[in-house]
Image (cartoon, rainbow, N blue to C red):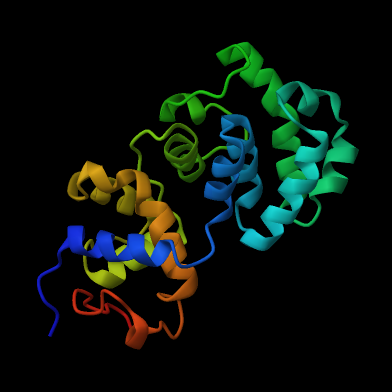
Length: 215
């Protein structure tokens, strides 16, 4: 029988777990560069792409593209050739080529930190906007990807059907002190222990809190 769900205790255990496993790529780029532009580009590249691929492609791209001026100068074909290994590379190349003009026109060449502003950028949806806000600017937001949506519902912490519903439910329920780390820690947890199929419940540090919904 599960004990009462204690989000503080859960997040404390997930923080410990996070530091024992490989860091999600977007967080790693922030640690290495502290550059909102590179975090934004890496986040756009990472959609529907494995971290290993995003890491390799980002490293290759950032050798050529250091800032939005470089991104404006590089041709679509050259850009597409560099990023071809990521999912939907044609569309992402198109969005990245559009990005410098929008940054210059709307935001003086700077990556904005507000969600509504980030959503104006090509290739940026709610998930990307929230992730860039938390990772690049260390500002509170809730990024809901497949891991966050699945695990939050598996725990029984929320009961939602879509990532957008999950974001709104978590905004209501999750203490704001956990917003910055919620995505990163759940992604690491979801990639290594709380996997979609055959989760490693016997190794789970928070098994006593989890309702195992759907498991």
